[in-house]
Length: 122
Image (tube, rainbow, N blue to C red; front, side, top):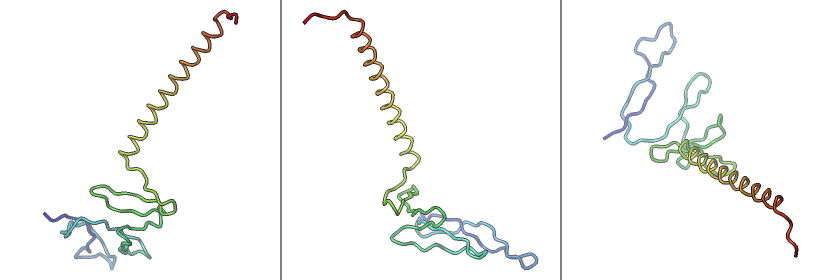
């Protein structure tokens, strides 16, 4: 099964010498990542480097990982989290925060109990 990708093709009847573009689906031999950069009014294909596209606007490198688009910060050499990874990290952080708050409350109760207890002779 061949994948389809969206491409821009020129309309057959341009009006008043203005080039009109409309989206069209054309066969693609393999799913790949491609991007375009607007240069002086024309879209130019961004060439891949090491399987990645460099986005000057975002300051990131983009690469395809299965069905996901991964974003890499080239300065730090790390991948940005995907939306699913962000949700998981947020859930872990929330659970850890709740556990820490429960521990603080427990310790505060213990301190109050120790303050109320009569002093013991040693």
